[in-house]
Length: 171
Image (cartoon, rainbow, N blue to C red; front, top):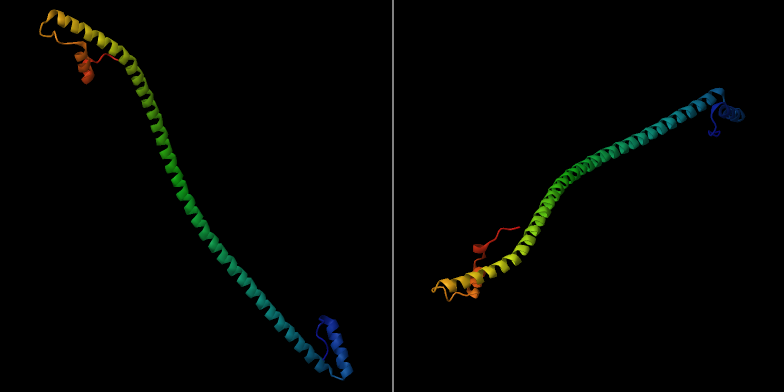
């Protein structure tokens, strides 16, 4: 038999020439051509089937990849929502903490002012209390015979034990 690598009329002429040389009839030639055509059709069908199968596998792979990406997208979206809610909570807490820090700073400033005022009046109060104690002791000793033994040290002890009795007006 002749080679079937060619197609179209060139292959037919080669086959016809081969048949004529071999002494074959025209009917044999047609049967041979019909057989080759059927073989080509079968080969083409098989190639088309393989191509459809490859295409279907590719579509299935793409569908699986799309489903995976949708799941991953939903997961990332959920994580983003959780993170966004966490950020809002942290921002709210941060605002509260900033407000508390400002309030505590103002209270600290007020307390420092009170301490400074108390320190200033304490030195004045101590000096005044000592002077009052000496005056009272001297006056008591001079005018009342019962208080004659009352001295400034006793008054100082009494002043230290209950200073609230001798509170002066703050600045």
